Image 1: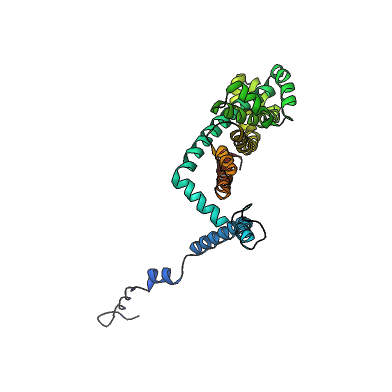
Image 2: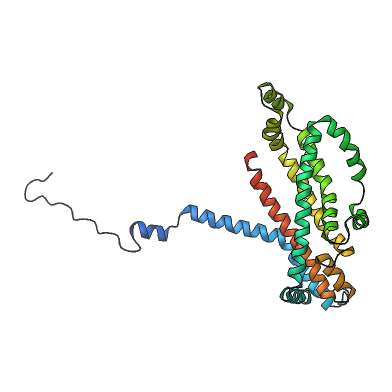
Length: 291
């Protein structure tokens, strides 16, 4: 080891320039996490394309069939003509006004059915006297086609929005009620007895134990009711009233404007699809505590 004046310290290492050192390493060797995230996005995109590929094929077949003469364009206009008619209805305001009227009726009837059906179903499971009174009514009304009640509702409520809301309410009430009843009946009785034995009030047990445990069944029944609500909405608007998407479809069909009529049908289908996707996302959020 050399000491004294002849000893020299080693020269300092040059500072890294752009492309060298940490910055250069990060640019030349990307983070593995970033690569995995990119592959995850690609996989999700491919999965989404796989799920919706049948819809794309259906759209292509719809466009090709009337143009190739496989189907009469008078009976099934090409999809491009339907989309042009849809844009015309949208810009003209007919689609917006009638769509808003339909959504108000649907949300009103469905929301009332969810609240009332959940309360009735849980009370049926909680109180034997309520079950004794309500259960025969449900057994009689459940097999009945709900659209058959529309003429009766016209007689009772007239041809305004009340009869449409009532039709949706009655049709959606039973699926929610039955699901809430089954969910509340399926609660572990040990939890209920333990809570009651520890001094908890029955109302508190109902709110804190029974309702959360029955929530998955209630949400499943609500999804069924959501699909029924669109069917009942369009059926009631076919027969009564002068507004709504069902009325618009019927009016355009009677006038022979079939491309615009199919545009109305596509609008209802799109509303139903988007509502179902949004509801599934809501279900996942509400049931995240079960994971």
